[in-house]
Amino acid sequence: MKETLKKKTKNYKKDRLKTKKPHKSGVFLLTPIDFSIKYHYNCILINLKRYTMSNSLDAILAQYEKNTEPVKSGKKISNEDRLKKYFTEKLPKGVKSQTKTFRILPAKDGGSPFTEVFYHEKEVNGKYEKIYCNHLNDGEHCPLCEAKDALYEDGSEKAKQLAKEFIARKFYVVKGIDRDNEDHGVKFWRFKHYRNGNGVMDKLIPVFKLKGDISDPREGRDIVITSGRDQNNYSVVNTIMADDVSILTNDKDYANEWMANSETFKDVYAKKSKEYLEIVATNKTPVWDSEQKKYVAEEDKEEKETASLTEEINMMRTETTTSFEKDFTKKDADVEVSKLDTDDELPF
Ligand SMILES: [Zn+2]
Image (cartoon, rainbow, N blue to C red):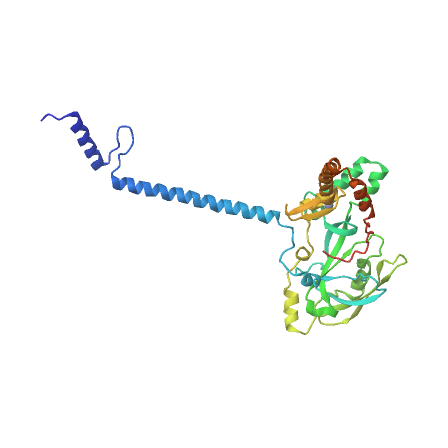
């Protein structure tokens, strides 16, 4: 039987579809069913890819959002509750003297209850702030330490004087109970280490030496802290005395709550963001920019605003030839500059 070329090809195709042998070009010729399966499989693949892509996109966006949030310490708590976490021996404004009773809690690991933490004390916006030192505490990069090193390297008297403002100081943080506010729970007491022997620690150590481990929950003692003011009106600790031996508490709920408390100073004292440190290191004032969601230097912001204002003034001048600039300068000069507040009571 003589087959035409057309028929031959048709049969060949038929055979190949039956046996699923590949065409000599290497490509399968698909039946409609095969094609449908492959089409759907491809669709699934594409959708899967889209799904994974949107998943990673979500993750990237979430990561970015998290990293651009203002730096907060641990859990979100109200300001009122936050204030309950701090204990201070310092006198509030206008108070000449006061006595407070505090019970130091023992360290969980049986070591010293006093944690050493380094802070820079830098004037920011007219107030001295304690800024956590990334370098001395964690061995990481700290823009304030870097500024200090650069100033010392400069070597001039002026630079050396300025460098002092950038030195990180050692502080102690200890957990305990404020006997006047037991319902506030465990509080954190932070005070500076002094080399001249006039600090809180210098008054606490003799108590430990004389009375033993006063932080013991069964056989420890409360301490009675009396503060007053020196000749410069600064708050100072006059005496720290040990009370009689007493149990930490007879209240079971309090005992469980206080002894189980696992918070550290990192949970209650906010750590500033990288941008914040960099701005302070250049002696500028950090202000929160809600649009950029980060701290920016107030001085840089003002420069920008003044630039656009100058443009506006020039425009107005050409249009109306008024003496707006003169008025503006006068108004600006009338703004009262707030005095430096050295009263460092705020712990956050
Ligand atoms: Zn530092």
